[in-house]
Amino acid sequence: SRGGGSSSSSSSPVLLNTCSSDALAELLRTLKRAFWPFSWECSPNSGNDNYEIGGSNSHGGFRAAAKAGLGEEMNAALRVMSRAAAYRLDRGIWTSPGAGDIMRCKGACERLVMLAGDEHPDERRDLAIILLHSGEPGPARAELRAYMATPHFKNAADPFDKALCYKLMDLLRSLGNGIQEPQQLVSIESALSARAPEVVQAVKRPLTW
Image (cartoon, rainbow, N blue to C red):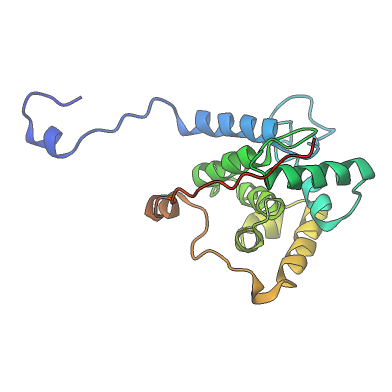
């Protein structure tokens, strides 16, 4: 609130944050996991939800999502679900069949990168694989490249996940200059400087079931 006629209060309104950044990050991680459209692996060595030691609030969904993106270990049921998801997304139905919601998951991942991407760089890695599955290979390549340039990737990343990152980057590089990368990575600054999206008329397509 503004106090009685003070020049400092009138020229510099105070913004109040009713929630801590840590609490917001944990909320976003919960939403991310709830909407994650692939299997979520928890560390067998963790007996709780401890984020730092690989509990169920860790980044346990990357491996399954990366394998699906590379075509590895993708069973017939998952292939059917993926085709159905693509069909539904093309018609404006965002909820993925089976489990998860890729568009809402993408929103949670983007906000996690803005809020905690510097402290937890693998949030950017997870955003990259979700962007790839959302049909945005240019932004996916930019975000994955940024993650692979961090000390976390070079020194602390799981060897198997690191190998998947290299395979994904090879796949994205093979697309060459045919895909457009954004000028800026996902960040609070890029979000604030971006133009408001234009409202476009939705194209209605019929469902066949």
